[in-house]
Image (cartoon, rainbow, N blue to C red; front, side, top):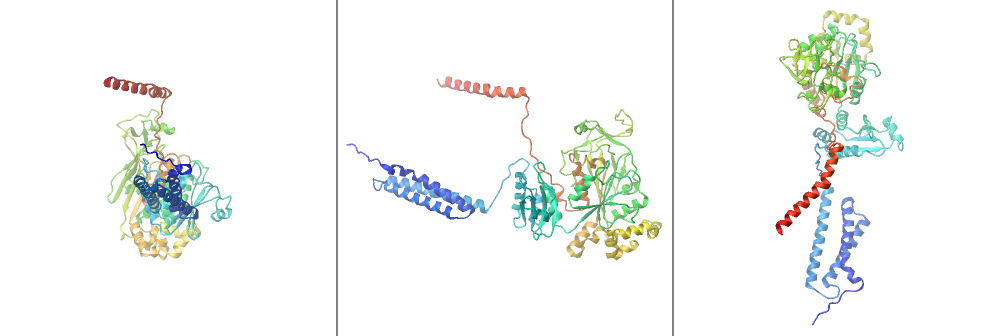
Length: 593
């Protein structure tokens, strides 16, 4: 006798699918509720979904028409427990994901991760800082970079995008001149600092933002003096061989840049962080060289870029540091100069020394048209590190006027050749401050009207002499008064005084046998500008952590093929692979036949 089962009729037969509706409503309300907070809509969705699931469970337990069915009850209970477990797991995952954010950067060069220097700086900010970007829609890369900064210290770092056309009042408060300008501002809005201008072509730079943050939160200002009066590179844009782009880049990094004429001053100004000597064509006066020597002996820093076929008169200073200017030019026969449209007399440098200035430049390019090699010797108490080294196929040409440039082992020096060097020298704290170079010079400076006028009209000199008693008498000045750091505000606190003691014990010198690499037009090519800016930053004795931060470029992993190779690859994919599969299948069939 057959038992005829009664099939559910009407809407009852569709009720078994109510579990999907319940899950949809519950999950759709629980996820946004856990992530953004509970609202009436999300709470209503969860309540409706749970209600539908409970009704479905009761129906499953009673099997709709057949009363209590153990098999149906067991299946319904398992389904209910599984549903609740899934909801609990999803809720916990979303809760933990919102509460404890963790990101994993799997890109090859960690393109979406801040450099360790940037992370440490943001976490240790002494005061809250906000970045204002005066642009419309944010670029994806810029927004991601700013988010990375904010994740390090949400309470100390924040940013905001402002459309200048919609909020002109805010733009006027910052003095915005063009679309895309980026500024740093303190929490109370009393301090502002320009960072850079961003666009669809020029994105926000981590190196520049970190450097700006470091300088913005520091109370110390850094002044760079550029020596003039001996045919050096001009500072004004538009002139031939000018270094206006280099000066602008220094100002963008918050350096104060001013010209320096030592023929009218008795010494290097006390507030000088770095003195730049860029391509002098005539020799300096002996008194000027002595002033530079005295500045180094007090813990100063000098950057010297000296071209071939010139005599800057700096031999007495350079020989004290173990540097001789070779009367040759560097020739590179490898043909690498052709990459930038130059000949063998413009070495393309890819080999850099182990120094903070160039440590992360390995494999990058910088070039130096008509460079003179340096002769470097060891001097007791002076640490030396070559910065720029030519390739194996280079030599120091002693007869550059000869049109047929060939290596002569009798007169030429084989490479690799150092074109740049960084030197450091410890300064004894108990060493007396060097007196004015000569008594005659001191008398001349006291009686010469030009010197008196210069000292009266120069604000820095007037301030130093008015506020520092020792400065009025150079012959009796103490080392503390003579050092550049003596006039900085940090000396008011014990901690800063300790830092100044540590800083003034070291003098620094960077010499490069070429100045044309930094002129307008060459400065922005490859790593030329980076070499100059990093040199000045290192010489200024700032925190060296930002020197090695380089932009992280997307590595090109695309395969470049000729049309013939593409045709062969297409034929292999369409013909060879299917044929190989058919042959394999035929062999297997034949064996199993």
